Image (cartoon, rainbow, N blue to C red; front, side, top):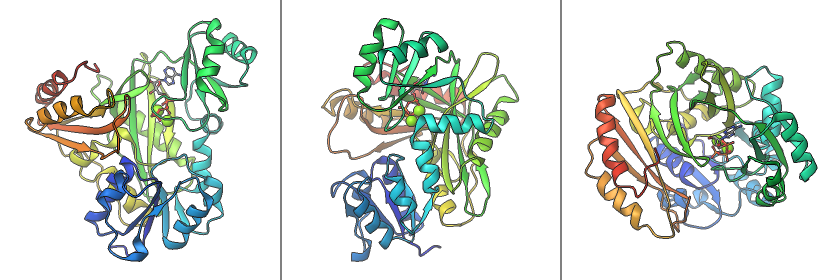
Length: 385
Ligand code: ATP
Ligand code: MG
Ligand code: MG
C-alpha cells in the first residue's frame, strides 16, 4: 500500500469518512482543524507523535505550512481553505490549489465553466447595492437567485429574490460577502455525479443520482437515477467528466446538475472533494468515494465505481433544534430497518439545520427500498418529501 502521509485540511464529517477509508488501507493521515475532538479526529487516533493532528484553522497560513511540512500529500475535505498558502506550500496537493481557488469563488467557477463550453445557466456579477440587484433582476428576470461568491454551504449564501422590493433584505441577509446573481432555473430534478480522477489520468464516474433538496439543503439522495430517458445517465456522466477535465488535479469531484423538462442539463456547482451526494457509495458501491479519493491522490489503482445493490437511498440527519431527541428517535428506528446503516458524525452540538449524520438504505429493488425508507420518514416530525 502507500506509506505516504496524507494531510487533510478540514476535520468534519467528510474528513471522518475519509479517515475511516484510510484506516482500512492503513494509510496514515494528519487532520488540520480547530479543536482536539472534531468528527475526523475522533476516529483517527495518531499512533506516533509525528502523526499527531494539528489544532488550528485550515485558513491559518502557519498551521497549513506545518501540515505541509509533516505530510507527503495534502488534500481538502472543504474548499474554503487558504488556497494561496497551498500554492506556495511546496507539498503535493490534490486537487491542485489553483483548482481549489477557482472553485471556491462560485462566480469565477461559473465563468470558467462557461468559457470552456460547459452547460451553465445565465448569471451576472452584482455589486452589493440595491441598484445593482435591480439591474440584475431586469436582465435575468424574477425570481432571481442571489448568491454569495464565497464561503457558501447548505444554501447559506443564497437568497431567492421574488420582488424588487426585497433587494435590501437580500443584501442584509447575505452580509458583506461578494455576490453574483443567477437566473432562476425551473428544473424538474436535481441530479449529481461523482467523478474520480487519479494522478495517472484515469477517470471514473459513479452512477448518476437524484438529489432532493428542501429550502436549499440536500435531504435525500436516490441511486441510481430512475428515468425513462435512456440517454440521460450517460449524458450526465459526460457533462460531469467534461467539466472535471477543465480542472487540474486528482481526487473526487462532486458535480451538481439541474435536469430540465426537455432533458437539458445545466451544471449548478462543482465540489473539489468528496460530496454529500456520494455518501451512499460507502454501502452501495464497490469502492466508496472516500477510498477512491485516497487511491486517486496516492496514485493507486482506482476501484470500481459500480453499484453493488439494486437500489439505494441516503437520508441526511439534519438537526431540528439544539436537542438530539428527534435524532435519537430516528436512529433508534433505523437500527430496526434491514439494509439501513446509521452514520453519526459526533459533532459537539446539535443545531437547527446542521448536518448531524446520515442513514444509507440499500435494497434489492426500488419497491423494497421505498418500503424501508417509508419507515424512516415516518419517524421524522415532518417528511422532507
Ligand atoms: P451546497 O454546497 O451545500 O450544495 P450551496 O450553499 O453551495 O450548497 P447551491 O448548491 O448553489 O448552494 O444551491 C443550493 C440549492 O439551491 C440547489 O441545490 C438548488 O436546490 C437551489 N438553487 C441553486 N441555484 C439555483 C438556481 N439558479 N435556480 C433555482 N434553484 C437554485
Ligand atoms: Mg456549494
Ligand atoms: Mg450545492
